[in-house]
Length: 594
Image 1: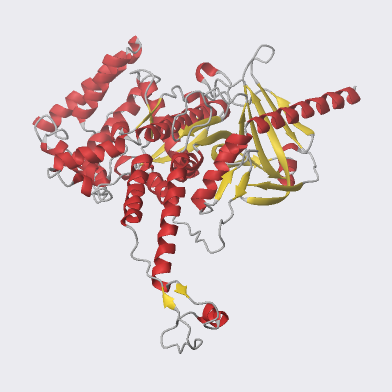
Image 2: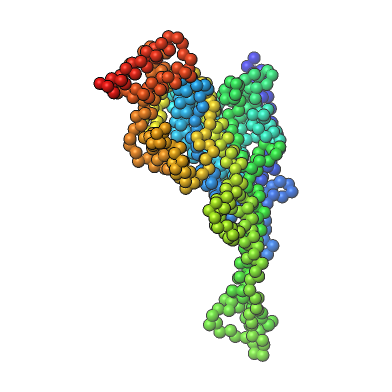
């Protein structure tokens, strides 16, 4: 029986390995394009892809040719990444309904996302992924549950610490992802996806308990020693496997074979832990396009123009010497040239050496150089007003200049939307992982408004909503100056004022935050009272809540009334809240009339 199982495991491992090799060959040309892009970004720009689909170095046509690199590709990628770095809106969760329990669940889910984002350095992760997507066209996020992370909750029989577990977010380069079909665009529509990565054999043993020999594996960062290629094949649910299938193979050995581990799709279905982010769309292609693909021809032309221009300048400045055969010692002339003050001895009766007149650098060199620079800005979508000032000489109004800048931003709108879409996907995956794996009660501390500390005790079943949205989504790509201008316009129009036209302490603190300042130490008492009133609403569903003398009775009455109108509580709960409101009214009258 054991022999049959071993044989079946070997066959499965071989089948997965062969499947990986097939996908690797199908994706080979696409991968060579990524390697070419990386070479151009790094400055190795005298290479190309031959007819066999391999990267090769281009040779000089003449030994004296200049082959310097004037790298505008890297500068363009840096500028695009900087612009896309403006998109860092906070992840928030929308309540499933107007009921107080759902509102509190949405607040809890938003606090979880805020805590995970801060702990995992989500801003840095998105920046790393954006570099990959801008260079190669595609980047992936992998959202999994790490059972060895989080607070310690005890120890096992071997003395190893047991931990609560936390969601883990990592960036996966496109070199590690092998889809079933290169023509299926969406991740979830792929029948299966392979994630192949070189992993040290010690980590493989810690994770799966299988000892492997290890070998040297070469990847984009160099040679990795003592590793094995771990092949993870994820298959979506199909007939015979309603929960999908995950098969892990390394070094020809089967490490794991079972159902997909994560319930991370809509409707409580199991799916892939990957989220895709692309830079530019390519119809009918799984992998996206990159701006570097479009810049490579321009970069080749620019290097050629600059180098030929410098060669021309060298000929003019250093000169080309015409010498009559046998008139001088040419070896000495070749070695030293015509140095200033040099005594040149030539054969009597011969013609002395002379410098040939080469004229000046043709104007076409400078014109072509400027044309290529303008094309760089146009093709990449990063055209700045200062780079094309001549073209905007006729625009004198601030509105006109603003419209020109907005047109430049629109050209990067697709990349903006892709990052926002990936952010929402990450948020949904994280919440669904906590809903699935946070089975025990755990403590979450999160920073609230007005410098308050919010403490939540929760477990996965308390997360009832995973409808993730982005805070200030429509203004996520505004520059700081544009954001401040917008806030001042909203202030002028009274959008932050209350019914009496006054600016409340809560609104004042919010305005300061939007302007980038946090200088107010004043705590928003109205907001604190609203939070306390919401807690009392929940308390009165199971018991009673005491009315405090220091309560803001008007705020409490409004919150309790809103709860009655929106929640439709039970008759008993409604009776308790109405009695509670009567006490607030009585104490409010006593405070006024004494």
